[in-house]
Image 1 (tube, one colour):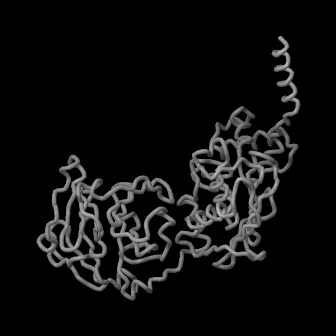
Image 2: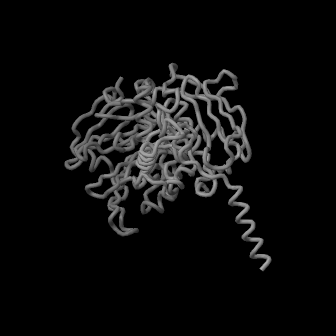
Length: 432
């Protein structure tokens, strides 16, 4: 009996100590109200607006789901510009710097740096903006860990340019492991979100955006929507194609919606048959690849990179793309040899073509394992007349023509007839 009474006493004490949640103050703080003491109709309208932007039923009443959302982890910046003086801006220079002023447990400075550098790669992909670390106290963006409101609710906040400083709540239960992000706070989301503010982006009502004010483990990096917005602000990255025009060999062409021409640890984008931007660091999209790539191709929403005797498979559901497997080429592709020169996939025939030296191989993905290799080491000259040996790269264009590249020469072949349609210098493709 005494134990039960003690338990009830503790519950009452905790309830008395727990602060009452002030919804009016919350809506005022984050820009849904102009005053913390509104009239009934204004208060109801503000609740409906909050519910609408958070994809909740717009009842206009403080139901449990609405209050729980208000209490959820989030950025400390308000949603609506009229609620605060400073409005979004952009940096005047195309090269800005950041400095890590201090860190907090459980982090080491190197861990915070890696998270920021990874986020910078995604944010600035094909954007005319460079961000680098500095030790100077005059850095454009200075990163702080400070005491804010204790664990949960506000995770951090950041200023727009020309200040740009970022402040993280040192009292959060941080983690670098996104799989623990439901119970702890995944630092990667907060870093990417606050960096977006530092670059000039306000909050958005789009749930699929990293710039939505509420913490999420579903969107942990800037989405295509976010990077497109930043590209609109700063412009597209200025292309430097000099090494291609000077005759550097190509490693692969990946036939994504906007094809990527890969050279070393960088890539260029291709649009309408001409290079449009680059070079861009390859690990912005494909983290975990080796230094040298032999060939690459797409099958559905997955990309495959071949290097020596291994292949690397990436899932393209979100950027940066996720490495989902790494296996021996001979195991994954029915004894196709290692050190392939080039490869492409023909969806209409469900066939992957591999080229090595003077030979080529064809693998039908619909056939049972062990019987998929329908062409095994046949001479290229017999079925692809006019195509040289040891090609550098190959890709399928418009589902009807195959482009081969070697020594800055572009060979275009009709896929169905295998007739060589043209041979010309790649200067047009390289935009020289």
